Length: 114
Image (cartoon, rainbow, N blue to C red; front, side):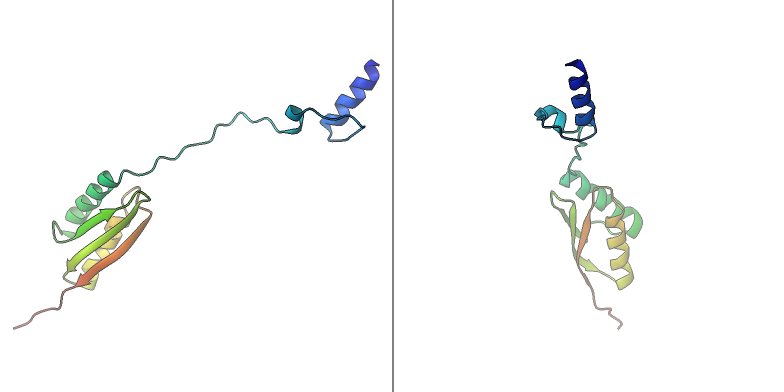
């Protein structure tokens, strides 16, 4: 009888069936890893970080309105003086940790030469 149990145990471990039904716990792999929970970015803190970057990198203080949703999508609204300044603003926003995407709703002001 002990030999039959030993053969059945070895067969179960190898995934073979000898007419013996495996208990549920033996059919599922055992894992000790816990799922890693990713924290969602704080939209208010991310928004402030973007404003800081715009001020530091691009030299724009309050001209651009910044909105960040709970998924890390940043939206930039407002006027800029050139296409280069627009790109710098988008790049600055993208550099902030927690920003997953930047929606560019900036508009380049027409240049005025008297």
